[in-house]
Every structure is written in C-alpha cells, then in structure tokens.
Length: 502
Image (cartoon, rainbow, N blue to C red; front, side, top):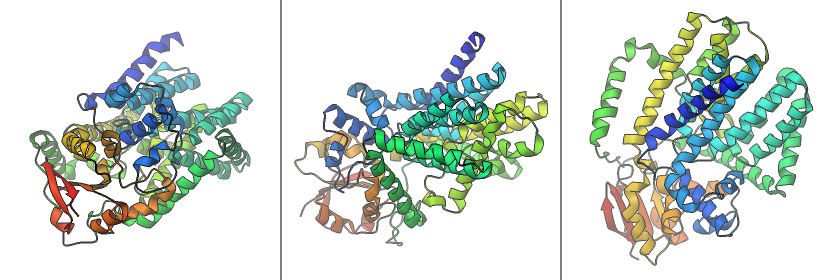
C-alpha cells in the first residue's frame, strides 16, 4: 500500500484542480451556496435549524436533510463566504481518492486504482456538481461508502461491512434527498435481481435508524422528498420553457455580448457544429454527454467475461444509467429537471469498471474504447469550464452588489427575483425576506412564478407584501410584466431593480 500512496495523493490533487481551477477569481457564483450559508449562519446564531424560514415569505418548516449544514457550521463564516467554492472540489477529491483506494484493495493493481481515480476525476457530471457549493457531493461520499460496504458484505459475508452499510446509509438519508432516493431504488432493484429479502431489510434498518437518530425529523424530510417529486410530476412540461409562458407574445430580450464569450465560446461552438456531420464524438455525446464512460459499461456484458469483486459493481453502474434514461424520457418519479443527478451516483462504479476493463488482460483496443469516452469527457468539461468563466450570468452574484446594497439599506422588505436564479442570494446578502420557501413540502406554492410565471406580479406583490422586483431583462422584458405600481430605481448589466410605489 505504501507504494500506492503517491498515486492516490496525485489523483486527489488532479480531481481538485479540475474542479477548482475555473472558479479562481470568481468567489460569488452559485445558487444553492447562499441558501446553505444562510442556514449555517442561523445555526451559528443559535436560531436553530428552522431559524432560516424567517427570511422566506412562503411558509413551511425547513425540511432539508441537516447533516451537511451542521458540518459547515464548524467553519468560520467569513471563510465560508469567500472560499465556499473550494469545499466541493475538496470533498469530491475524497470521492476520487475513495475510488482509487477501493480499486487497489479489490485488485491489488496500482494501475487499475490510479486509472479509476483519473476517470472519476474527468467524469463531467460530478465535475459540474463541484463547480459551485451544494449538498450533493457531501451526500455522494456517504452514498458511495454505503454501496461499497454493501457490495463487500455481499461478497464476503463480513458483518462489519453490514454494520458499516447501515450506519453510512443512515448518514446518507440525513445528508441528501436524492442520494437517499437512489439508495432506496438500488437496494430494491438488487432485491429483485437477486431474489432476496436481504436488501429491503437493510433498507428498513437504515430508514428506522434515520428516524430514531433524528428524533423523527427524517419523516419530515421524507414528506419533503415526496412533495418535490409531486411538484415536478405536475410541472415538468414547464421546465426550460419561456418564462413568460402565460404571455406568449412576449419576446425574450437579447443577451449582452461578452467579448470573451465571442472569442472563446462562440468560435469553439461554431467549429463544433460545422464539423458535426463528420465528427463521431458529436453523435456519441448526444447519447450521454454527462458521463460518456457509462457508454463503455453498456458494452461490457457483450465484450468481456472478467469476473471477481470488481464486476459486482456492474449492476450499480447499469441501474443508475437506466434510471437516468427513464427520468429523461419517461419522467421517472417526476425527475426530468434533476435527471442528470442519477449519473452522479453512476460515476463511482463506472470509473472502477472502465479501469478494470482496460487493465484486466490489457489490449490496445480496450484502451482505445475508453480513450474515445475520455475525449468526449474532455469536450464536455470544456463546455462546463466555459459556462463558469464566460457565461455564468444567472449564477454570478458579483454582478449584483449595488442592488444588494440598495435593498439592504432600505426600510422596506419583500423581494421577488425574476427569474428565480438569484433568489437565495437576496436574504444572504441583504437580510431581507424573499418570495420563496425552504420547505420542500411547500413547493407547490412556488408554481406562481417557478418554473414559469403563472400569477401576475402585481397580485403576488399585494398578497405577500413585496416591495422590490429584481429582474433580468435578458430573460424577461419589462413590458411583458404589465407593471403599474413599480418604478425602476437602479439598472446595470441588463438587470433592473424596481421598487413599489403604491
């Protein structure tokens, strides 16, 4: 193992650099980051886990899994504000190290281990998740340890692995909703495939452990998860639609042109589209741009007969890929908007399987197959980097400092962001209440303005005491909103802040 340590460390560094590099000099980017840090600040003020709800005009208890918030509360608030963008790259480096260590322990082959870690590091979907602060990477670590422990228990029968499966499963349920859902889906699927009652019994033990250890709070989390699924089952058709769906005559304003975007993104995109007819990577990426390595795993049952512990990971990889396609084309459990998250939980076993495929009975054609997937991954990573460095408008709170300052100094309260991109940033940077909710059980009330506007803004402002509208004119033209009781008090970079006058 001593000889493997330098490569394991190198894999962790590689993973971290790929995720942190595009964020250098851009500390104020993110959606979920400001909601997370707002909760953390309330915990530090000893306002309790539900204290954050005072910043949101839509009621309901804060019902998100709590573990990550309490973990971050161990760090200084000032450091979190300025360097929160480093947290997920660091955490995901642990995932890369974990897959490397597992690969080495299962195969005793340092090249299998290091290649698995490198493939994980270059997997686009998890890299994308790591570019901003969110709860997903933390949940993925616990999820991956849970599944690895379960598979090792199945292979060895060692009760210590069973105990670790249950303990880490409980922590997963208390860390992230989607991770919990995928864990449940996999264990039920394993029960069907193996014709065994053991996986459901393990799932039951995990569920009861989460309920008991949280003093019943997990039941509230579960209701919230059901609420989110119901919300998207009802509103998935509106996801990605014109925001002013209720007014089809409204035209979208043109976005301001960024010089770097023209010289980098536009030229690369133009070349990519012009060569698509003779570019096989273009068509392969159409199949799965988020984890091209998963396409290799689909081929494995047909082109290889290797066995052993490593290949016990095949059902995990194939099932999460099936969940992704089901969510994409069948609206599986209402998860069309979050469909790519299924591939977050596909990345670990897929990296391990692709590496073992290359090095078990090494052949250059195997290296070539994975090499094509690697090229596809690099293309997708490039797209992700470009989005952060040149076209992160809906994510970039540094554009709004003047607006935040004006709202913070005003004696008035109540803000709507249109669209909802910067909603969580409002209470974090201004201390004002915003039209949103921290209760997943209460999401249906958001349908008034998310994912599209269905209730007139004037009506919402009267009902909820809203005094400010922060509008991105590149998404919603002002003349489409039909506002009469508001006037513009600040404009910059195609954002406008309107204040209520009546």
